[in-house]
Image (cartoon, rainbow, N blue to C red):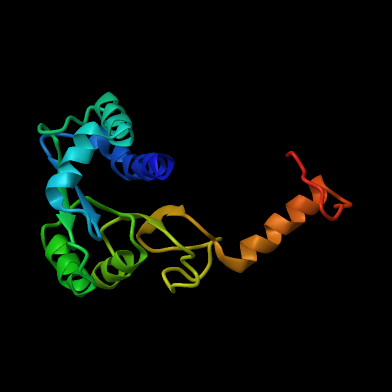
Length: 176
């Protein structure tokens, strides 16, 4: 869990960081949304989580300081799927600079609500869920980390295993 939070955090940083040269008195807003974790717990995670600390350290190195020119707004669907779309509309209306989520279903709700606000997500197979047409050229305003890239990538994994172990033996454990 920590690794994917870290990678998603770096992706969020990548969307905000190019604006450093243009930075003036603008306050940049990151909207962090959880499908179920309550908002108060999200805030606790932000102050105690090592992945958030790394993210905020990197942002600070790029002249973004929480509470000065950077705000993180926390949202939660409170475990209610029926709240996803209204929550997406509510968040988009606040005009965040970037949205971060770790839920494929929430990502679908955001995708339907905005084509302009960058969305950083940790998701399952985005092609299978209809989020993007292909992994090679996803297009749009969505980026992030894919937990499983579907059967097309599984074939590539098998090719790699066959390259590493050209003649696999039955009932043998391989140490890669």
